[in-house]
Length: 392
Image (cartoon, rainbow, N blue to C red; front, side, top):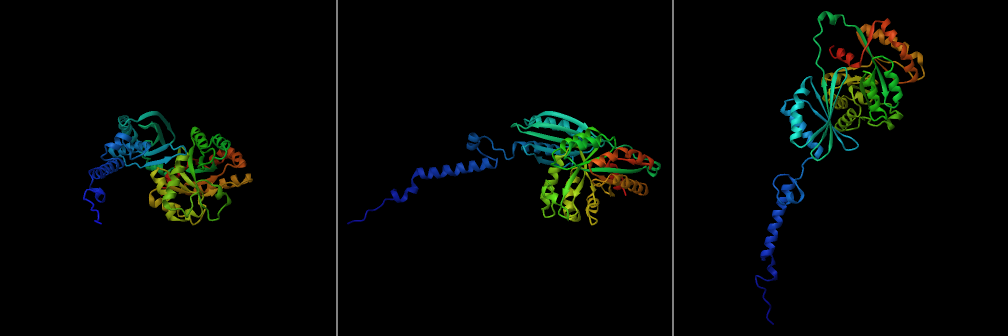
């Protein structure tokens, strides 16, 4: 029986059929078109079907515009980003005096040209800075908050004779605020220029900072850091900076905490006897404070702290705490330690003390103004002491 012969155009050579070749070419072209759409270069079919793909999120497009305008105006100011729990993007830019006036008109014009809308402007000031808050709606409707924090114009240089006669000064920082709004209100109502240090993520962090700001008090961030003792409270301290964390995670957490407390001028450590001994980890912390334009107070919870030497190396304005002034349940401790703080201020020119919002401390502070006056020591915000200490 003769074997059947399969012709070249038969089943064994179906790959040669014209429709197979056409399908292969079509798939190739569609693949190229899809690749072009993914990379936002050249695409026709997928752009027509799906619209132009955004290589960045809608909110990030606003951040890009801000960065480009900063570069265009030659303003070397880092842009801090934070996304809150609701997914809203927050941007913060620190500027020198006058730079905001230069940037704002061009940035408004650019945002409008890109299809964004400036919904709200708000301005507030404190002793050292003017704060401009913008709420921007991106082209696709996302809300972005931009905070411009601007240093005020500096005063004229102090005459040499005046420098020699500078007064004795001391700062008193009240730590651990944020868990009781009543404590913040009581502290603010003492008519003393205390510096309020507020724990991030505490229930009343924002409202406590608002109270301090409304009373003209300086506000600080109370950065929680790991201790050598491993306090039980550390297990329940949100935002705790731990020595085992990679540097980038520490930087991310510090940025997040900076955004969590408004009006801050600086930061000090909460606990931290382990972390402050690690110069490398403190460099990660302090590098973020530097880019945010904040000072640092070393609470000196460890005699082996490397925080101040690291701050000086990085150019971060810094000072150290001289005394913890109070003790829970001991009303007499405050006056005794205040007198020692005043002695140190008169001996060196300045000093820094830390208190806590214990009921007996808040009560005892009511009469402390007379004690400062009797000893010829001026009670000032922490930033004033930092400025003097940084010029040593």
